[in-house]
Length: 383
Image (cartoon, rainbow, N blue to C red; front, side, top):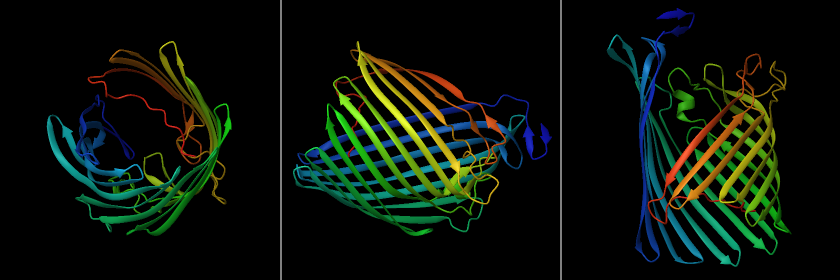
């Protein structure tokens, strides 16, 4: 084991192992009443260079389970009740010469519940309203000023179609026990232009509280974080035809107190962030192949005036990204290939450490056990 300043180098091979189980199912209790449930259990072990104080191995366990009760007494009314829990536990150890000593535990839990009602009060007119609640709890050998909090959100949304025109409007209020009340909303408009062309425009505001992992995770957290507040606008044009489509969107998002990570993966707030970008996606069905492609260009900037990092790239955000998916089915068997690439980025706010771009290639094989098995869905925008 070599000590180099604040860092440690252990000249051994570090490994990673993950085992997971994911189950999802549903049952029709009555003609208008159905019940759905899901369970995820994932366990992993990660090895890394460390010391007796911070450990060099971590056992992680993630468990997620929940259910939804759906009541649809008619085409015009729908009521959904959901509840669930997620646990994320990390135990840190220091392993040396076959001996393993426990260093620390960090355990977060999130309980959620929601109810949403949808009413189709006229042809092409939908009104949705609901309430959702969540409670976060953290347990550790460390002592925190805040170890639990809850958030209650109330929302209303309208969606309407008028011939070739579509309108969407929503408003939401979040009462966060730790960060107070925040009201957000959105407004969107879409119009069909003929020949499958569709033009869309939208604007909205957002609120995002830092997670308990952001605030309190050992050795890579910041309990002084403020929540993010954002404003976004988007313009898009798309064309949908038989066997092919394409979508182009241009957007700008301005974020106050943007949560980012420094070179040690510790989160911090960037007072002002601006992200401009454009994205082009397309789909083509060709001689039995499904081809999906996506390319995006972004301009992520730190707009905090009076700082040395003003107008620098935001840390760890590439300007160019792309992805290509090619899939083909052979009866119940489906095979696919995904090629993805990302351009260079900077590892710090000063833009003094450059990270090279990278590319990955993945192969997939799926086998459908029943006719109602999994499949890709291409969803049109709501506006």
